[in-house]
Picture 1 (cartoon, rainbow, N blue to C red):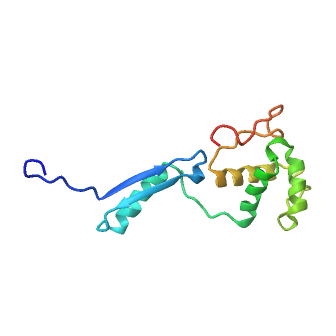
Picture 2 (tube, rainbow, N blue to C red):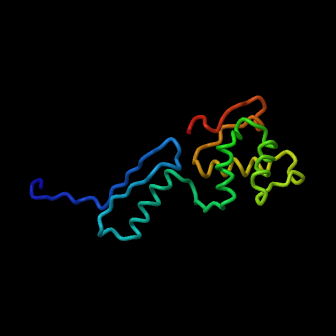
Picture 3 (tube, helix red, strand yellow):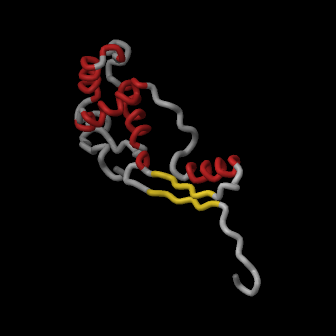
Length: 142
């Protein structure tokens, strides 16, 4: 108490634990139980926007498996056609038709998008995507 005045206690505190992969970062809210649910939601939404732009749609099992496959298969150092053929062999129910996509462009787009959504990191390049580049998705930001 200062000069007969008691400063108001904060209704909430927002914290964050940042990790190299934004998908592993966390947001911490410490709220007064008298804070209305709508106010808690607004605090969370504001803090979340700093990490995730836009909405975050649920991922289908196919795309979760594709993200894991891209990371585990060394896809960043191989031609997309080769990576797609291996995917098709291992995952026949989620096969990408080579006749519809001979250069594996659609496969590459879906693979990069799935990897990016799971990791929260930016895809840094691919041997089959940028001629002469052997950049890895494990580059900066990972």
